[in-house]
Image (tube, rainbow, N blue to C red; front, top):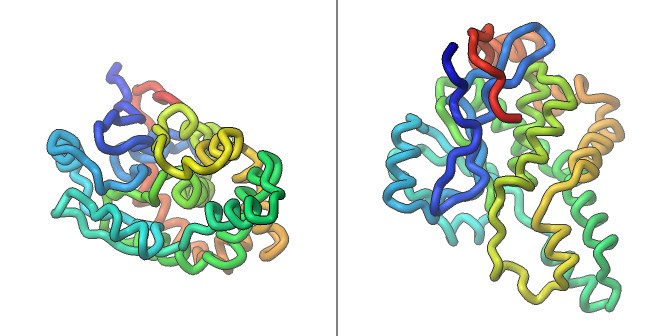
Length: 256
């Protein structure tokens, strides 16, 4: 029996770089290994990291960072074709506004995080729609990322896995792997209280749940969101599955 590939790849200049392959779907297939990766930004990769990413054959990157974020860290792998799908960050500014009012607490920070996820659906569905348009093209292996690779990227990855038919509990497990693999920047938002930094420096199930609550409020249900928001009709869903699913071989399911 062959072993499954490593889900998480250890890079010195990036964290949370991992493969969303190997997950079972409702129709008996699994997501293909080494086709879709998710990560934090790729602007600080070492020379050794660059060789690892090149060896994976990554050809395309889909970058959810805003304008200033992008200029702070240009992709270090020159061969990768970078597509910008900007979603400007809003949480840190909102937190500082709460500080100015004297109302910032950890529960407030948690709710601001949840609200940012709701806004992915309310205000930024276009960026996710464009991502799926690219996913239907021949651009794999590919990587999806933002700055930390946990929130905008986490929601995008959850949408991809949903569209491919991966069960909800496995999608939640994949989302929460960020808390194992993401290395926080100790200098980021250093002026914020520690409990607030903890809230914004990790992921919680309630964050992803808030996004899907907004899907229900705006579109009725997830299937309607995939169809009407992301423009994935039956033909597109079939094409997506043909491209990114396979029938499993004898390998183990791999780390979840």
